[in-house]
Length: 130
Image (cartoon, rainbow, N blue to C red; front, top):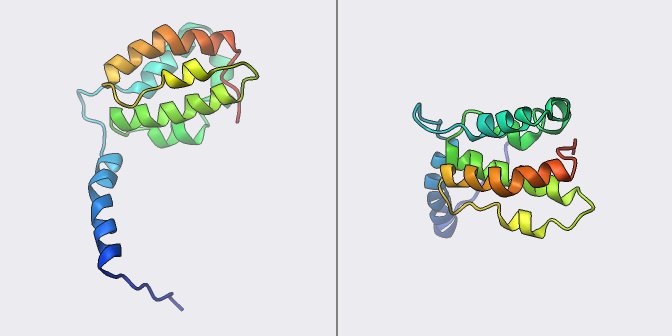
């Protein structure tokens, strides 16, 4: 037996408000868009983190969800992933987590990643399986 769903005017307004963001979230990455997941993975590989990627990156739910998404959504999901990685560390990583911004364009985000986040990942012996 299917549950009865009662939708009033307020519920309909909320549903309508979420349509735009959900359409954006589910939109595919365009051919000319940067693939941040690929770029981050390449940066990790360039530092010899291949073994750590198998368990700590490639199988992570946020990374898997980001595959094929547009670069802004990838940025959002990578920020979630990296925040959790930093929180798994016993070190104080507040500065690094603050550097994970959603309000910048993907190429700016990648620059911050390379300059601030990537060195911290290496120094903290991340990524780890979570």
